[in-house]
Amino acid sequence: MVAKGDEAAALRLAEDGNMNSASYNSIMPKIKDPTLKKLLDDKVKEKTIDVYIDYKTQTEAGARAATAGITLAAAQSQIAGEEYNKMSADDWKKQKEKSRIFTSPYAAEAAAGFNNLHDDARKDVGKAVSGVDKVAMTNGGANIP
Image (cartoon, rainbow, N blue to C red; front, side, top):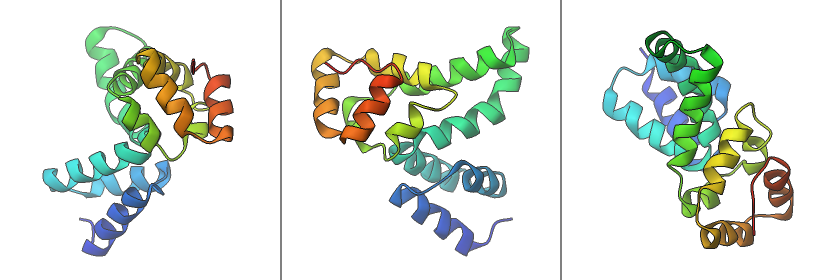
């Protein structure tokens, strides 16, 4: 069981975009309330989707690989790709650690998801990001017109 203070701290970290994989991986198994889990998932995805994807690939890829008869790496790649493909231009603009996303093990999936956006949407994101993030995104395979 997780203490109420831990839940509040986790929500605060997520809200501020300061959640990291170690903290998220530590708190999620302790939370039993499905409503709270969904709330935390949604908050983490909003600003640090890479943290959410890291957790999801660790907890779901094994079962997917076994069920689909694919390798663990292929299942992890599928999960990451599915999540990145759900993102809109506004979702990309809200991400706090774009440079971390595009240097992660799932940078190719992030780039593919980003590149699936319409040219105007990608251009809009490009205008909104810092120079450092833009370089990291471009180096990671994002096509910013």
